[in-house]
Image (cartoon, rainbow, N blue to C red):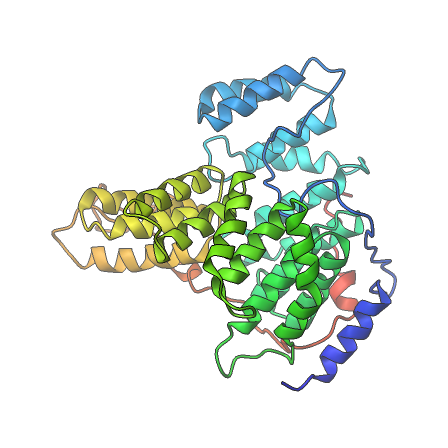
Length: 424
């Protein structure tokens, strides 16, 4: 594969260590973060607050959330909301901003996050949490808010946002696809905290079909450069690295497929509580069963992953339920897809669209998509017991950026100066 001029220019850009742009001062953090790159942003055992009488209440709220006792957890959160401790308020926002639980309240979460604008220690993470929420929206207009906030987060020295900016430009989430710019952010992430995001990017580029634009990016070269670092991270106990190492050995795109090795690293990540790895190990268990109970093991892993807030796990569960081909399991599948769709999981939206088309054509079927994620009124002439999913939700299943422009273009000043200062 020939190396394009854009990639050669990108190499120089990365070597420089910092992207310099006019009148912006786009700053990157060079120190290691305090948390894992893909840590679950929910209340965890690492959140402790000394010298405050709210610590016990916080722990109680955490346990109630884990046990799905949301009504009592809400009462604890109301108590915690009276605290002046900014870290506790941030912890509340992390719960309230999760669309997949009954405690979801964007109003309260966004108010708390916006209130942290003057807190230098927390404002970067606050911007990141808002951005991630917008990334998971089902409509493109809401997704467009994510990139400016992520740029704000890295300007405020929350470098985990680099991997998410890579996703924005790689997948076209609220922004036209720009693969070279995506690689620049993934490389920044690798230099700052983990090689996992850039290895994942290389794996996806290697999966492109013939004729798809790759901008001269050489995935083999990326893996050769960063795989040793990923292995060191995984052996050192970094969850995100173990998960990505398991994925790359499972896929076998850029390294020789090694299922036992993939299972080993994914199991390590699962034992550390990573929700994404739980889904990956479940898929591996179904594709390469180890016993007669492999499907049961996979479903159990998917349920744990879903409970931890992984929308892709809900989609996988929905697909398993559909295979039963009964009205009861169809309903379970629909609910699982809807839960995933609330977090913007595109495959779930497509599953819902296909189900709606299939079920609406059968007059004898009384278990259709509920449309509960769309807030739309029942379509004219439809039974109140069988509301139709909204047209805009179906469109969202295939919604892509308009006017993508040059997918291989290099960063320029416009990419970095259009930062909306939501916190000012």
